[in-house]
Length: 177
Image 1 (spheres, rainbow, N blue to C red):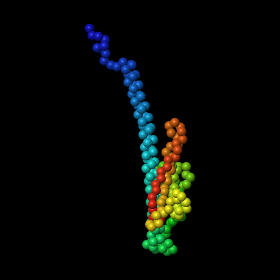
Image 2 (image 1 turned 135 degrees about the horizontal axis):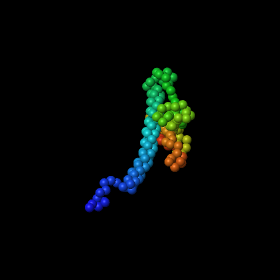
Image 3 (image 1 turned 180 degrees about the vertical axis):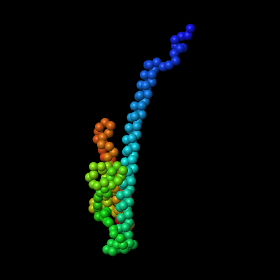
Image 4 (image 1 turned 120 degrees about the vertical axis):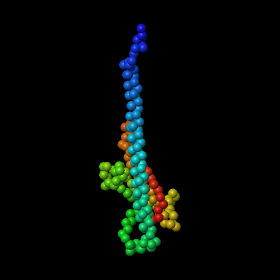
């Protein structure tokens, strides 16, 4: 006669339950990993958009600075009789200003729009030294230091419900102005 164990062809209910439990624990781990990956990807996208906005603001300042320098040097005419209209937004010894508000995709918005994710501001460091720690321009080439700061909120709260601080990124460049 054959023994009972030799005739068994399938799985017992206990074995199936243990397999389902182990499989379920593995799926929960993958779900947690997915949430973490999505947060990381969103943060990377926001940093990329912030960098693009900062570079765009810096390019606008540099383009206007080149035009302003060319007028001052008499290359494009004089400021009293310019060859084309000039908008001078970044002038002044020490100046600060807003470059604008932008949505999650980096598209411009009206100031104080509730869809605002990114805000971009610029600062032009002082042209005249007035005390210790004050930066002075490089006068030979009429260079000024501009700093563009982008601020954004990745998320309102973290997984524990604690408010997340606002993220910022700064870009600095010497520009002939």
